[in-house]
Figure 1 (cartoon, rainbow, N blue to C red):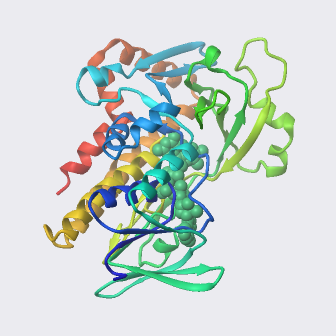
Figure 2: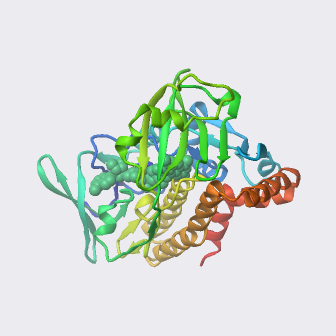
Figure 3: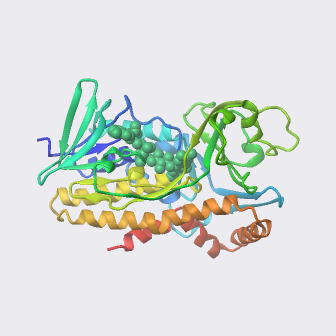
Length: 404
Ligand SMILES: Cc1cc2nc3c(=O)[nH]c(=O)nc-3n(C[C@H](O)[C@H](O)[C@H](O)COP(=O)(O)OP(=O)(O)OC[C@H]3O[C@@H](n4cnc5c(N)ncnc54)[C@H](O)[C@@H]3O)c2cc1C
C-alpha cells in the first residue's frame, strides 16, 4: 500500500501547500521532515495578489488575512534625491485581475502554522525527525531513505516530491545540475521592535546606492504585540560575522531613517543570508519531482521565491491529480517541468535580478530616471498595470500557462 500515496520531502511552506493541494485532489500524502516540527523560519513575509487568489482556493487566505497586514500601496524612495513615489495596487482589482489587490505581509512562521493545521485537518500524515538522505526510484515506486533516531527508515510512494529547500537532498540524489550563480554580497536582515510604519509606511524600498534598505512591518501572530519591523540591507563581501554582531554595526544600518533620531533602535534579532540565482536543470526525473527552493532560488527583492514555490505546488498537484485518476499519462508531469522551470528561468530570475539592480543602483542620473519612471507609473494606469502584473507575478502565471 506504500505506493498508494505521494511522499513530500520537507514540511516547509511549499511542502505544506503541496500536501494540502494533493489532499484536495484526493491523493494520500505523507510528509517527511528533518526537524521535530514544521518549518518555523521567519524568512518570507510578502504574498502577492495572484498567490492570495490561489491560497483562497485552498482555504488558507482567510486565516492569513486575520493576521497579516494588507499593503495596497508600494512605496519607492530615494534618499539622496529626496524623492518618493507610491504605487497603488488597487488598479489590479479595478481591472478584474485579482480578488486581492494588495500584498499581504505575514511572517512565514504564521503562514506555516496555518498550512500545518489545515494539512492535519485534511488527513496529511507527517513524519517528523526524518532527515532524507537520498531519494531512489524504480519502475513502480519512488522512495526516500531517511535518517531517524531509530536508524534508517525508507518511506515509499508512487511519487516523491522534493520540497526540502535550497540544499535539497532529493535534488542531490538526481542527475540534475543547480545552474546559476551566487552573489558576492550577502543580505543582512535585522528585526526591531520599533514601529516605523507611521513614519515610513508599511513597506518602503529605499534606494541609496550600496546602502539601500528595505523596511517593512511584519505581523506574525494575532496578538497586538505579535509584529516586528524588518530592515533588509546588503552586506559587502569581506564583512565578518563578528563585525556584524557588534551592536554599533547593527544600529548604523538604521542611520537616517528617522529624521533627528539619535536614540538606539531596540534590536530583537538578526540573520545573514547568502544570495543565489539558481534553477535545477530538470524538475522531473521519472517518479521524483522538485518544487520550491529545491527547484530554484533567487534573491528576495520583490518577494518572489516562496510565491513561485506556491505556484509550483498548485500546478504540480493539479497534474498529479489528473495522473492519479488516470485522466492523463505520467508524461503530463513533463509539462510541469517545462511550465515551472522555464517560467523560473525566463521570468522569476530576470525580474528578481532587475529588482536587485534597481534597488542598489549607485549612479544618481540613472536613479533620477528610475524615479521619473516610477512617477509616470503612478500617473498612468495602463503603464502601472504593466509594471504591477510583472511585479506581483500575474504575468508569470500567464506565461507558465502559455507553455505547452
Ligand atoms: C531574507 C529573505 C526574505 C524572503 N522574502 C520572501 C518574500 O517576501 N516572498 C517570497 O515569495 N519569498 C521570499 N523569500 C524566499 C523564501 O523564503 C523561500 O523561497 C521559501 O522559504 C521556500 O520554501 P520551501 O518550502 O521551498 O523551502 P524551505 O522554506 O527551505 O523549507 C524546506 C523544508 O524542508 C526541510 N528539510 C530540509 N532538508 C531536509 C531533509 N534532508 N530531509 C527532510 N526535510 C528537510 C526543512 O527543515 C524545511 O522544513 C525570502 C528569502 C529570504 C532569505
